[in-house]
Length: 352
Image (cartoon, rainbow, N blue to C red; front, side):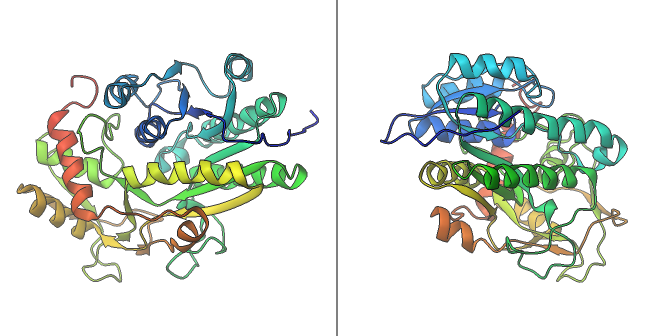
């Protein structure tokens, strides 16, 4: 297929944003921010790891409608139908499998799902002359030999198939931007999103046992899980536990709005970290949760997980300089909002 991207429209026309994976954790928070900012939102999500109730609640919170289509983003024919029905101006691509451990067990599933969905979107965007693309990438694309904080021009390289799918999608998008200079793509490299909307109506609702730290803490505090296992306490950090850059999901969602605004006015491809620039240890998060919410969380120290490194945190300066974005919410906001969500939704979206 020969690609050609149309010139950008002039003027400040009201935009319709297609959000793939919009019913998920980060996707739903981003949909809320988009609606509040005056954008129209169309969501494509197969609900494999999400719940349509999140979109219902976003509509309640904003008082604005979302157009929702349930199908796999790899389905090029159905994507074409959506682009035909709606005047899409920009795509935010969240849809994808994202469990690191699972990616090691079923790598082909991860490569097929994450790469094919990205390529299908690009093909349909080309057909419909849409050229603004915001990609949900990850700090997992950075190699382990980088010094901290991580900068966008650091060494790239991954330790698991999930990371490589993000890396490869970035390469695909970079190549398209070189071939078609009018194409505008922002690669948003997330660090560790936690927290929930302060209303407590939308939040992180993992299926099964959580892979991420904070939902494991909240479910343990609630009694759904017996105790938290801290993976390693012998790292070269202040308390021996791993240090990561945790960012409030609302701040992260707002970063996507800034990326959309940037893409409308610029061409080419840019990679941008979305993090706070501050590293917190596992025990920092645990103790902040206990202190802020006045609840105790039982935990034990377990062995290190293969592939984990001691410290990872972002240099967020490029996001501030290029997008005019920086994180505003702190660790207390993150743990308070996460607990508020979990208390109001003890079984997640499934039983309110």
